[in-house]
Amino acid sequence: MHKGLFGRKIGMTQTFDSEGNKVAVTVLEVGPCPVVRVKTTNGKDGYDAIVIGFGARKPKHTTKPYGGQFKAAGIEPTLHLREMRVTANDVDGVEAGLVLDAAAFSVGQKVDVVARTKGRGFTGVIKRHNFHMPKASHGTHEVFRHGGSLGTRTTPGRVFLGKKMAGRYGFERVTAQNLTVTQVDVTQNLVVVRGSVPGPNGAVVWIQEAVRTVK
Image (cartoon, rainbow, N blue to C red):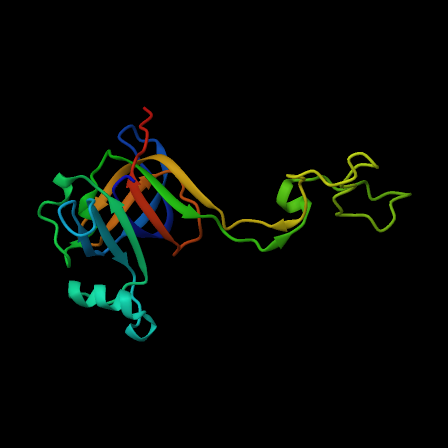
């Protein structure tokens, strides 16, 4: 797993590059992400990893096993937790209670942003799969936004898997790859990336180092 931090999508705006061209960017609020636990190869876990949290959770809504981890780290319970597999060098100097924020990113860095798209609920085939409506002329009777026939005749006598039909649309995990960091505001924990990020404003996202860099 590549190293990253939790964040929240603030929204989109526009800026100008060095050549004066207008560029669409997305503003992300990164962290603060406290370190809840540090796992080492020499410890009882047997591997190197860092567990970070994000968001606030009421203590009464936290289970006792997780509450013990937060208490040992000396931090308030968080709503989200994620474990990052790292190397032994990355663990050096990192202790429970350390807070990570936008300072972990730099201008010009390539990042991947993982988020969930906007949920649209249960939708029909026209909205979900971009089907066309039939002609609303003579002969069309009570069939306007239907999906048409679904299966075949006796052989094989069933609906094939993957058939485009009505169903839940949206709320899918999507990764926007190779987004360039254009601005970093450490005072407000803001990171501005070039391009769009999936999900609605205010959604929780995961910002990590780019898995593969494309020029």
